Length: 264
Image (cartoon, rainbow, N blue to C red):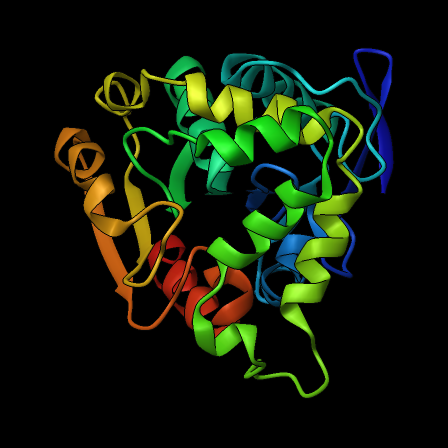
C-alpha cells in the first residue's frame, strides 16, 4: 500500500490482508540497506493471526520517497507520523538492527503510542567496520558483499533455507544493492554515530523482547548486555545457530518467539 506522510510517498506492505482498525497494529522496521521485504515471512503470519500489519520502506528505501534521514531521531519522528497517517494511534514495534534503534527512540519519545518493542539483532552501540563504512559512503559493491558475508552463518552461505529454492544471501545482496545511491552510506553512518541507545532504553515504559542470534557477527549477543540491563522490563530470547539475518535464516523461530511475546 502507498500513502502520504508529510507530503511524501510512503510504501508499505500489510502482509496480504487489509489494515483493520479493530485489530492491534504491529509495525516492522527494517535495518540499514533493507526494505519491507526483509519481513515477508513474518508479516504474512501476523496479518492472518489477529493483527493489522505494517512493514514499512523507510524513507529513501524500497519505494518510499527519500531522502533517508541522517539520524535515528529523524527516522523515529517519521515512523510516528506514518503510524498516525495509517489511521492508528498505538502499535507494537518490531525492529531489526538499525530498526531497533528507531523503535527504541520512538517508544521513548512517544510512549503512549507504543505497546511493546521487539528488538532483533541489536547492541548497545553498532560501530561499523571502517572498510564497510568507507565502501558504503562511496556506493561500492564491496559494501554489499561485506554485509552479505557478515550477516549470515556459514550454513546459510551454502544454502539451507527452510523454503526450497530460496537463495537468501543473493536475495539480501539484491535488496542492499538498491541502496547504493547514497542511502546505504547514510544508514550505516547513522548507526555508527548513534551512542545513546542505553540511555534511551532506560526511559522505556513498555516491555521489550530482545531476540539475539548466538552466531551474530554484526551485533554479537554479548554487545546487547548493556541494553538488556538498562531496560526496565526486558525479556531475552537467544536463537541457537542464528546469525544477524535471523529473520531470514530462522523465520519460523522468529515468528514463534515474537508471537509468544506479543500475545498476552
